[in-house]
Length: 126
Image 1 (cartoon, rainbow, N blue to C red):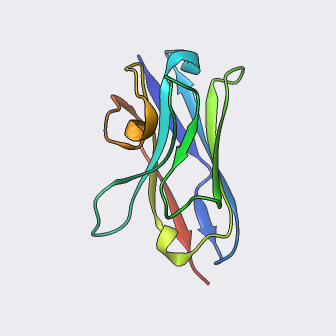
Image 2: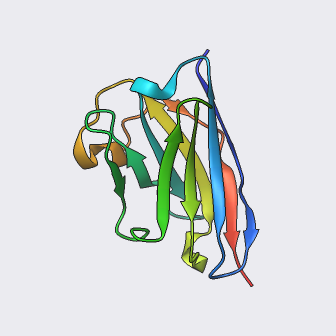
């Protein structure tokens, strides 16, 4: 059974950093597109960052570009989201996702995934 488990969420002050992890089991990440999404209270889920399995290039939403970094460690079958200079508007439930479907370009920021984690909360507050 394909599963993703997030960890690393928590409370952080504005300007601080967090690293989220997403461990995969039941499948091997290597050929999968992976992504991070978030849903703030009262808002729709949005794509934050992803790695296309078509070209291996990372993409970011405009709101996090330059501050967030997505990476993947195939040896650990885990991918990550490093978040720096966090702002209060980053407060949300963060989800990781994966799919074996080919996602090219910025389509990997869209809702095209079929394996989802349970979510990990991130709160940015002083």
